[in-house]
Each structure stands twice: as structure tokens, then as C-alpha cells.
Length: 100
Image 1: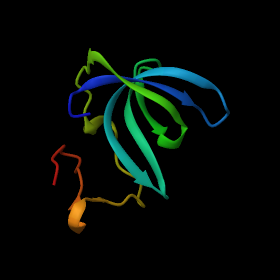
Image 2: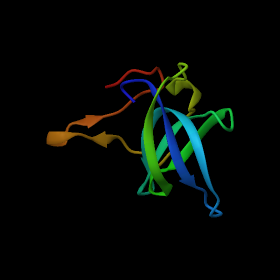
Image 3: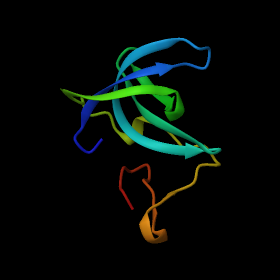
């Protein structure tokens, strides 16, 4: 994500359909014990939440992302929690796009 490159994922949906998607990653989120990759899906031309456990393969491409931002993700679920880094330090990203 730091390199702002498109990733190509092989993803299996809830109904068992496997597709290859080019995704512009925006952030990772955890809610209800489940991790998600949230990013702009070029196949669907929309922001999507991909369940990390259903990503079978991921490859970073050489294609640059087109600049989708956290503002397009929307409000996090009410039960979302901040991610804790090393040493118990809490990190979060607010909707202004600032990392705290």
C-alpha cells in the first residue's frame, strides 16, 4: 500500500465464485474478528471490502494507483476497533485521512 501500486488478487466470493481482480488498496480493517482489504476494484469500478481469508493469491503489479482515498470508504462499522502496533501503541486513521 505504501508504494501505491495496484495489486492483482485471486479472490473467492461468499458464494464460492473465484475471480481475478485488480485492486487499488486503500486500507486494512478488522471488524468482528475478520480482516478486510478495502480498495477500489477495477473490475467492479467501485470501492469493495475483500475478506482477507478469501484472498488466495496476491501480486503487486507495476501499475500505479489512480488516487482513491479513505474518504471514499465511508464510515467504519460501529464495532470497528483501532489497530495496536508494537508496544501497545494504538494507531488509527480518521476520515480526514490522517494517520494517528
